[in-house]
Length: 202
Image 1 (cartoon, rainbow, N blue to C red):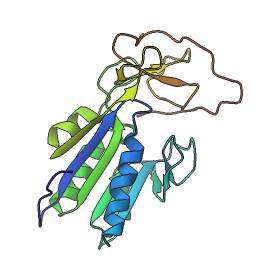
Image 2: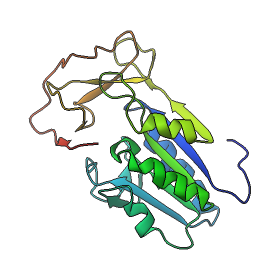
Image 3: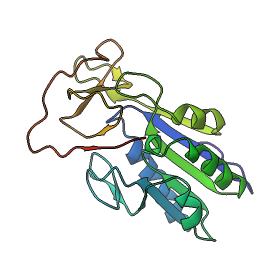
Image 4: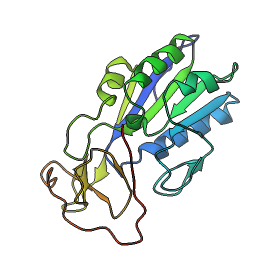
């Protein structure tokens, strides 16, 4: 891990495709801060209730207590005075205002850890992630494994015939693909009838 600054805040961004371990890495860093007796708060968008309404949960079922929010500015309102570390999962769903919020937190001396998709299902940059990557002190690009060929994967293949940019789903709705195996405009399968999907705006 990096040598972190002392006495100032900073921004860390964990990005990558679906199934690359972004949330698991966020949880790992937050737990290390907790072991270090630091005051931590974690936030996630309410739209992401695939595994739990309130907890941040990885695809491997590692979980962490969090506060679900509708809008990025709620973080500033809900922030405790003694918080030293803020974690934000699925940051791509927070909209452009999250960039200002994250900058404000770092300016207050808080360590901010953001995790989210850097590309949408078409392989295009997923705002506001490009803006967060530009202002972050530390960036981690996580890679999954392509389910087609086994190469490192950095794209999310949607398996649903849906045109909305945001369709929240997990296994059965998306697959990790490499750039060669990714088919941007294709919906290659129909999800199982019991698959829970949630849609919303970013």
